[in-house]
Image (tube, rainbow, N blue to C red; front, side, top):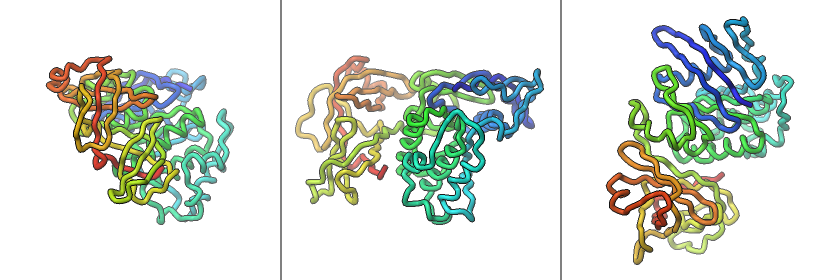
Amino acid sequence: MIILFDFIITRGEFTLSVSGKTCNGITVLLGPSGAGKSTLLNCLSGNLTPNNGDIKIGCNTVFSSDKRINLKPEKRKIGLVSQENLLFPHMDVRSNITFGFKVRKTTSKKIEINDVISIFRIEHLLNQMPSQLSGGEIQRVSLARALCSGPDVLLLDEPFSSLDAITKGPILHYIKDMQKRTDIPILLVTHSFSETLTLGDKAIVLNEGEIVKSGNPYSLLELRNNISGFPAESVVNYMKGIVIDKSNLYDKLGTVRVQGTDFYVPLEGFDIGTEVILQFSARDLIVATAKPKNVSARNILYGRVSRLKSMGISFLITVNIEPKLGLDVELTPESIDRLGITEGSKIFLMLKSSSCTINKY
């Protein structure tokens, strides 16, 4: 289901003038603070009313200034998760989630509560109160409640803003898994290029109230240094894997398998068979054009460069590792030239175990 929008709204001295559409998967609305991302989301949800224009969700027109149509938020079949994550403090987790079913209207999506609990892995939280939950757990419950309302579309307004880097990794994958299992389109607001590359099937870049560009997330990387206000962040590789070995008890290291590729990483506190999120910065991968010898890095991988994109002051290359893993690597222009790296180049990657962070999925 695609959202089509073409409208103008003025709030004080700020004007948002946008025309575009989402995709059937995960569309990321990307831009610096003050670009108009949350305003756009609130217009789509019905919490704000444009001055003029049109908004269409699937086959249904939910706003049209010419036709004098302006459906109330509860009539738009949209699930909205805001930055505040406002759970009902007097209800336990189970009651918060089932509240979504009570407000559910007729919908094209059939969602069962057991499926929702399974997707977000919150079985052990059902009897707890919101005050007993961590930031990541609150976010998972908020997403679960929104999903239980049976929305045709989910709108997520910076759902990771209050989470630290370690907590964020599993939530990213919960959202990806949720979208694949339910087939509900998602429009997600963020100012992070790393989150955009991890989640987005399509990205829309907003700046100063206008859409600058839209398309494949990797095609928009060059804008990171052309638009002021984006955080100076490194791209992060987030991957779901499973613990398969813990033989090196002395170093507290073990093996996590990700899509057929093994990583030697710190594993204290994780049992064999545990599903985990492995994450590390694209800047932590060291590149060599010949097989490295006598190096301290525990992880040495071999692959082919499938994509090379400029990010202004640096380049991001995507390396395909057999059988089906893709890793993002950040390099300086000088390194690209000196190593002669182009699309199709075969290279080795080195990664220290200490550069890896593990969190339970």
